[in-house]
Length: 414
Image (cartoon, rainbow, N blue to C red; front, side):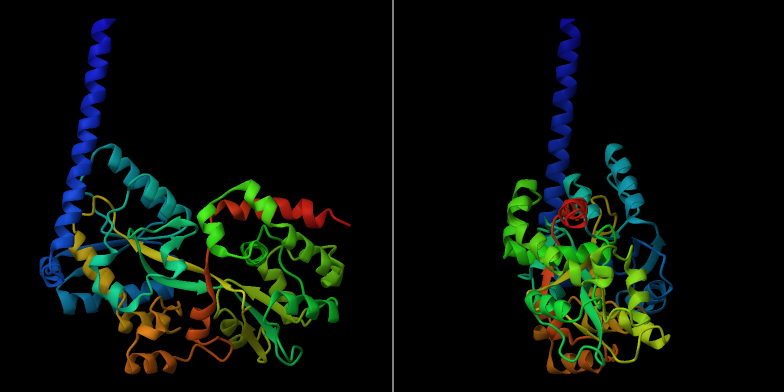
């Protein structure tokens, strides 16, 4: 028995020493790249292959990567770019298995990630970094003080991923029916009371309906930073949500069908709006109305507004796996994806229509003019307005908490 204990202790010690050695190797690699000149990183990336693992379910996004990005990084840097379709949870599962097998060289160089997937990747040390300070275009064009860049669904980024694009929550309305759209939640309440039956929101089990509640939760707490600093805390949520529940119950009798039922999802709310039963809809994409207007589903008089208390923004990011075989190439490509040319092309609806993560105030006058020249549609708010009012997402567990408590606090309240 004693011999077994000694052997067991030696194995534990060996595991700890190996882990420390691996940690030391990672630190050495990070420090080594941080000390390199950027031009040397680009030179080392020349002639290499960079594989980006990403969701592949959108034709426009795939065309942007294959037809626009790939030929340009090859021409500019001599890099062969390969897009590998794979959903993020599968990517993380692959990385976890490689980490367990101590596979120090994998085949992923860049992954497209955010939210709960980033939280899991960070906690399990599946991603390389910090590296954001190394990239010139991050320093030149990105507002690193912005909360939606510092936090990813309530998890501190800490230089482990680079913002690539974003969408923002916005309301859409028929300007022939709504002459002066509200700018605050108080004004929205007054409009709802004065126009009974013409407003509602989706059941919070729907992502957009839940986002509507989260915005109201921000208002109830009074300070988004307080939520971010607290993290997920049920007691905190209970203590700071009373104003939200009171608001929802005050407007409830004036909602569509007197708040006795709610659209199951955003699709149903959009249908009510398109048929003129309600005068407003909403969604987690500031440009979402354009495709519906073009197809004749939404009236041409559709416009958008956001509230001055803030508009939740969902930022998505790029990260480098811990065992990327080509970190220099990965950083070179990511840096390229943050050039104004790449970001503004991505913004164009010809490919994607995804909003830029670049700070409009950091663009040159020529770059700003190019941004303003992009016609996203008459219903889309200006980039500077969106930037001014954007708020970060908070811890993902609040989504479930709000959905469950809404039933008790609103639906079952008479």
